[in-house]
Length: 434
Ligand code: PMP
Image (cartoon, rainbow, N blue to C red):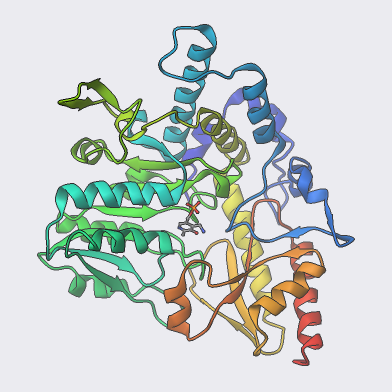
């Protein structure tokens, strides 16, 4: 476990936040206090207290993030970068300060290596498009894994319409553990890129991305890591990982929707052509020729989401003050507890049994359709996700249509897991499986 995010701690905030950090032997964070920061958690659904366990899809937002958005619109709103007036300069400074907050959060070397995107999906599409257009030729190969989210499969397939790129896949075993040893056979002289998810959103498996990056770099192959399901749950240091590209979404880490991050090593971002054309990303435009702006603006065409970026920074400050290592520890405990308690349910089948796992549990009970199970849990106030989780190849590998997925965040409790387990038991009884 690394503690470098402690460096992000701002001493001015620390005193207020110290209340949230308790020296309890069981849990290192004060969940009751944290839950107060998320007003939506007080909601009742069908007369039952909301149990929100759909955090892998999106997380709830703390007051500080919501307040940041309204405060910005009410007091600091003006389009950034081009204005000489006070409000524009103030908004520009806030946007660039947010970039610096992101840089520190994932320990990138330079702020210009942080590109704001709409989310993980757009960040992957950007890299895939710019990389393939500039670096790939017919016959080249790209390696992904069998547990990718569709957003790390389909962008590559779109490129296949223009050039003959072959997609190769690292398989996982019956427990949902990636068979990384197969990478040595999959890499050939034609391998141009490796793109892997850090944590599977369908299985919860944490992949050994550092090992994958090491192997790839031994052959001079760049690696993109999809951090959509890792950044919210563990400390991330992109320099330590030596990732060439690392991407994540703001809304999965208590920030707003519509903002995400592409980290790229400066050398790569310099080498790749722009993804979209428009304002902000240019230096000089004539009808004959356009020259492009420097990093990071080269990849940020159009008006940036400067409200979203500052609200994302508020979210990152929020989790940093609690401590990513503390959040990781709390969520690991929740996953262990959930696994143990759910294991007592007759006919339960876990989809994904990796030892290295994070944040979520995917399961089925007997032959109850996940949709039916999810609908009954919903009536009990429990929000879980059902279906293929945008990872259909994972479902195909297990020969199933979908799973029920309970995914946890920093505000979930063991009591809520007890409610989930009781709900699943009740549903199983209703369907005559107990
Ligand atoms: N990758 C993974 C592993 C994900 O879990 C998700 C979201 N479910 C995405 C990519 C896509 O994220 P977004 O929809 O925020 O772009």
